[in-house]
Length: 80
View 1: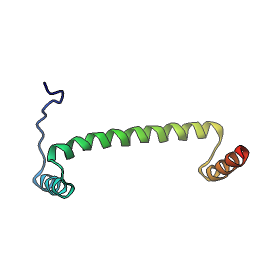
View 2: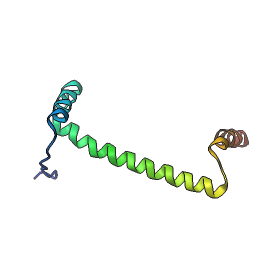
View 3: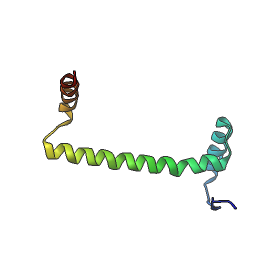
View 4: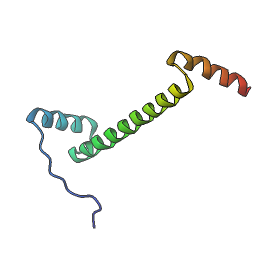
């Protein structure tokens, strides 16, 4: 028995054409390509959440973006 569920979606003609062309270019099926879309969306959302967490933590510690390179350098020097 298949663990995947079948989903019916609608795409505007231009997006369907682009999807078909990209699937052909990459040697993948449309289904494979369209499965990849939500995976990437989820990864990007998780990355945005992680960036937000990092920004909040940096703000709590008073670290600005301009401090990052210096802090990395100092940390690496301390390890040696």
